[in-house]
Image (spheres, rainbow, N blue to C red):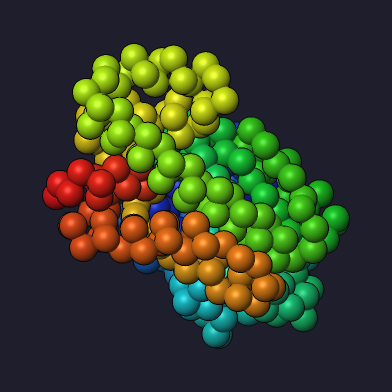
Length: 291
């Protein structure tokens, strides 16, 4: 008997992730707030488009979600037409949204009351990683739910780990975003300095990328940062959403993340420059003062 999966949320990440599941022979039904997106997906992949949340998740062995933020999760998970009330007992719910640890814990509690498994599983790797099936997935949940969902998530991941109980995946993603914020700002300042010093910036990158300054951001974003191209998918608006979650969690656990807090303000400046949909490497434009 074939595995049945529901996938809710067909943004730049969810669309290809659901596609990888369908291409692997899993019977996938998708749902999106904009029904046209679900119909477009069903025309491209061997799956079907659901017309309601309740109808989409009913009978599914696994329910995957990848939406915007905490309020979106509350909307699709709770209520008489939501996932919790309509998922089949024994189903495993896997949430790929980058959200707060608190919402993950709340949804896991509701899921448990309805005999459902729950894994919080935020991802890293961006649109390119989703399309290539090369995401890094950090998970929180119990061993049993994770073990059931792992073979399906492997269809679109290159690294997949259970980090601890529910909420641990979201907290690990926060660590990831804190690290990225500092790296992108440092790279922005370095490239800007090289330009102001009238160096051959690409030649500089070619040299320092072979030493201690090397990073994924340098390897994958320095060339487009130099060219002033910021269309790589993960928008400044979303980064600010993620950093707000990080800052709130830091207040709760007493950690000090001053650089992340400062970079969050810098991204606010980028938004004011009109760069809400630019990707996160656009921090360099703030230093140049260019719109």
